[in-house]
Image 1: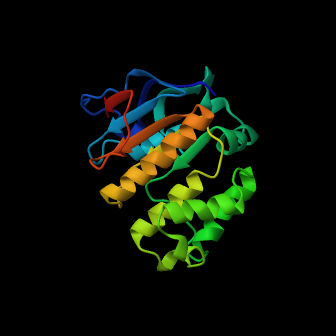
Image 2: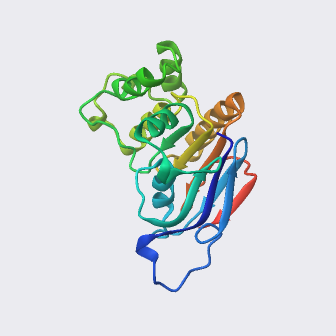
Length: 214
């Protein structure tokens, strides 16, 4: 996939309201593979909704979102499954981990679908992220910051044309922010992928090609 195009999109819940200034909603916008985008948003302006629309979790919006010219509303379930395995790597704000499974089990579930990383590579990512000692701990016993790092490792366990990262470092300190930024920058460079980041203040520490106000 080379482009994600957003054409006059607007969450249904915003319909009928006085429009707020935005460089995303009700605009013509293209995310191009290989580039880095930062979407700065205030709370409640729809940043997580935007990510869900791109990933196909939700369709409660007007306008059109298309992938290389194909309206996403026309995609079949098998097509979405393939896109989520090969093209769209999504890190949701709420992380969506299985609390009863260990940190490694949460990541391995993803990797079994994609076969993108070896066990050694995954364990190395845990080491780099400073949570190697949590591999076999149930996620429910981890701090919120540790859980976010597990979710980051899981997101890296697949090929991607676009990394969609919704507040990826909201629970991390500056040092861990730099580590995460380096991991995503390296992964994107290897695959020629785009990185699309949303933030309400604690930005992933990357140099961005485009910054937008939601």
